[in-house]
Length: 435
Ligand code: S3P
Image (cartoon, rainbow, N blue to C red):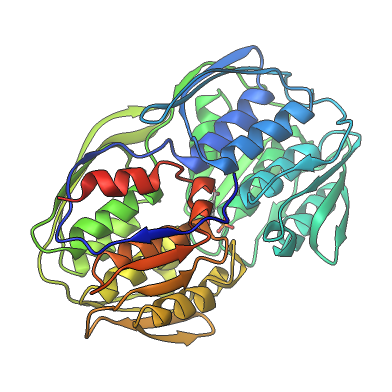
């Protein structure tokens, strides 16, 4: 999707209504990849409508996986049928695969391709070509694969082998993508593969592997998988993405008189850190877990505004809110105050999210100090609005829109179309929630 268009966001008095977020992006990638290497067909409902998850499907098709898109609905998502080729059964691609803007696609798929005895080259857009890949290259080479990269960045060529060895691996960075790449390789390897993380990260891979019938050993921040297991295809329903819901959670917390209910949203405890932070900043947040699908809890979140307060986010909390930090910074512009440390990973996301966030909020009249590993936002006076550059980063485009709701004048968000990477319906839903 083209991201070059601009959107003007007018200030809002309050937000109210009910919303169902798009299918969880993290879970969508994982179900598509595991369905591709499972035995037999899988049916997936609620697959993310975002561009990143379309990139995963494009790459899997390039690896010979039969995928049928049965329907696409802006509210309930995409209904897919994927015919699995079994563990180790992907086909040699005839062309370079395009992962678009998606770090999850290139990193997690590398773990699977490491176990296939052919060469695959993956590349992506200008943002993806700047992102660090050594974090997956190092463990996957220890397992027996070989890589060619541009000084640790894409284009990335994976030279896989059907003779991978299990390893014990302790990544330096707390990254669910790295953990997942190594576990996916471990599924195909000889013996046990164990990943011990420095801090707990989202555990959708562990839950998804179990839902496809694999056994995964878990203890604290350690996850282990025995190679040689088969996966079984099935029917899967993807919960709504709490990282997309985060924009409405924050909008409701920010604007006096707001009351927003989010339905059919994933409530996996490794993803609900945002609720703890907005509660500490003063919002009234209620959740109800209604049921679970494939080990993923799903329910309702209701958020009402109360006066905003100052809060801090400590380093150990960062992996649980990594994607929500831009919109939490936007929340602080509405009258609170937020200090974040230990978030240096933000500098290697779809943009350098610390400097792009600071530039953007400042250009709207915000007060933000930038540090090497975080930021401090003070919401002492209202933003004035103005022109802001999302730097082709979906989460920044949407975070600036939520900050803009509290400004005294309109805000023009350049590169606003980048929201389509995770939430193509975002600007339409934003207008529908204005009360
Ligand atoms: C993701 C993990 C996080 C997150 C990204 C999605 C995932 O990245 O920022 O948007 O689906 O595993 P890292 O694992 O690199 O921290």
